[in-house]
Amino acid sequence: MQALTNSRISWLDQMRQGTHLEWWKPVVWEWSSCMVLLLLIPAVIGFEIRLPLRWGLMRRNLRWHFIASVVFCLVHVSAMVALRKLAYFS
Image (cartoon, rainbow, N blue to C red):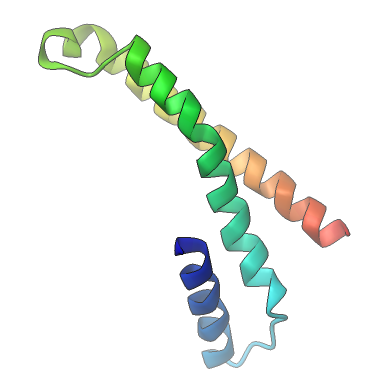
């Protein structure tokens, strides 16, 4: 639902600015991001099970959560850019 809504909003924003944009481009932008996020959910759950962020463990696990958040962002951006390049190449 989020990808559908964001695709439509992105397309409407581009039209409002006077930019002629094919309808499929915002779809690729939004769906590539959402698909990667869905694929990362098991890794996030596994990480949280292994290194939970609870008061008693906060001091020990907080640095690992910081590192994991940077890795998560890098993987998310890299994978969605790769999917977008693949879509634009086709």
